[in-house]
Amino acid sequence: MVLLGGFGIGRFLGRWPLAKLLLTALGALYILWFGVGVFRQMLHPKALAVNAASGENSVVLGALAVTFLNPHAMFDTIILVGATALQFQGVTKIIFMLGAILGSTTWFFGVAWAGQPLAPFLSRPDVWRVIDGAIVVIMFLISTTLAAEAWRQWQSLR
Image (cartoon, rainbow, N blue to C red):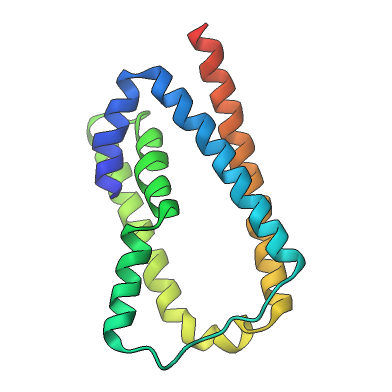
């Protein structure tokens, strides 16, 4: 998906500035909406529940669904990475794309590796309140940054 974003959508957005503006503005609104949802969740945190009875097939199918049917994953890896990749050309774009792939791979393997040892800690609602609070701040910062970029794009189109 990272390669699709960097070499597919990114190229399309580079040729169609109005589409880039629209996707940037919609991205800002989407991330803001996501942040508001996490803020609401933060007000009423719940403990992490683990279902250890899941079979191997359901775990694999769940992982595939989260990867390929997840609008967050699609937006992050295809649209955001694609739009960010627009600023790079040639070898630097390839290095950027490899860095994005390496970062994503490292993150997800790290989360999987740390999941079981951290489960007792992550099962506490107060821990989730702190995690959700950090997510809210990050989402609002990203949304503000995207909104400012959309405004800049709008000004350059006029």
